[in-house]
Length: 317
Image (cartoon, rainbow, N blue to C red; front, side, top):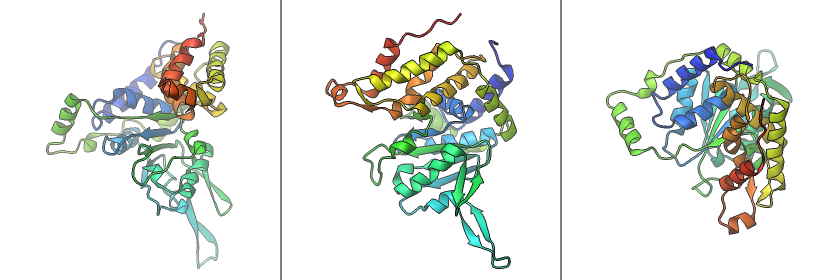
């Protein structure tokens, strides 16, 4: 096992440097997004409109050299707009597949919770299996592939809650939030006479990104760390403060994100601190807090913090 992974670290730093040209003052969120992409995961951004969610997604697509498509979801967007459809070729008499917007490397599902349930569910197969099925025929998505979906807070005009089955397919849920005053001033000054997005350049290719993802996937996880992750997830399932704990898919997501963070910290092996660092952003959106916890004024993040404190982390040799 090694303490550094120079090529991956250098490329990751170059990617973040490019994205920061368009997104100011959100370094932690940018790190989580990059980690999720390296972990072959999908990202859910839950925030109010206008804080830069779309800007961040476009900046990542440019810095990573990825083919990027965006759909602004509204109630009249159809499933076929996402997955594609078949049309009759009148010359040959055969049905020809017309690819939908999701057939790209980085798909931005903007305001996903404004779409109908049928359209939302059109993403499920793509996110889980890397393919779409149209008229009984499966079509593989390009590789690498990631979804960045945005949703407005629950209760915003024209929105509905995403189904739990779809929420569970996102590796992380993040929030950009309002910028700090100094960062907002910087943002204003950057936009005088130029568009910062035009300065974002590709520093890698699809092939290089796939190699980085392979490196992350090969990161070592010891038996002790694997047992620690399972104990943490089991604690969420047993807690009286939670109506529902994390699924087995959440267990896999925690390990994948911990591997990515370990690589971004210069290691080819996972330590308990990596697990602790990624645990809430990876698991929090999958949990349901109990009335008992609500009556005590507790929020989900506090419950997760208590679980992390209660479950003893292993000491690695």
